[in-house]
Length: 110
Image (cartoon, rainbow, N blue to C red; front, side, top):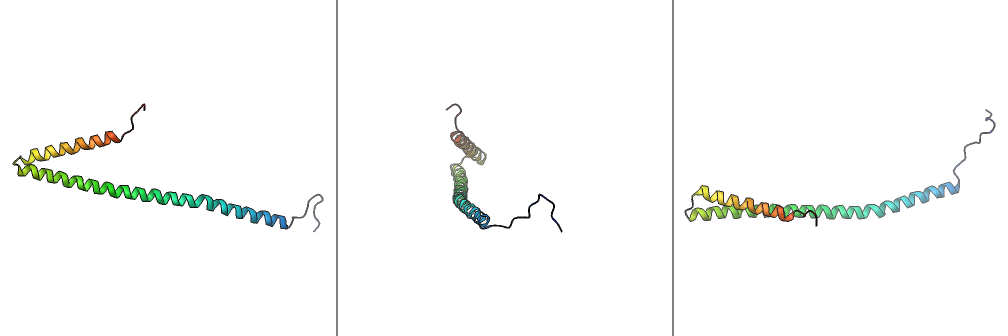
């Protein structure tokens, strides 16, 4: 078969093309390692912190519940009617929760 005039036969990969391809792959791997390793460390640290905060929050909530129960039982021991004991400690818990939420909120304009 004769080739059409003006068309060139396909070029075979040369040593320069192979060198460029290998260099591009090598630099891509270096860039991948340079970006991937710090991100993996960052995600591992962030996940560890999040788990630690969740565990601490769970322990704090459990302690708060036990303290409220102990307060109610103490008020019952002082012959306060159970309804008033639960109401007083429920109100104290609600107010302290509201204060904690208000203290953690950033103030507008500052």
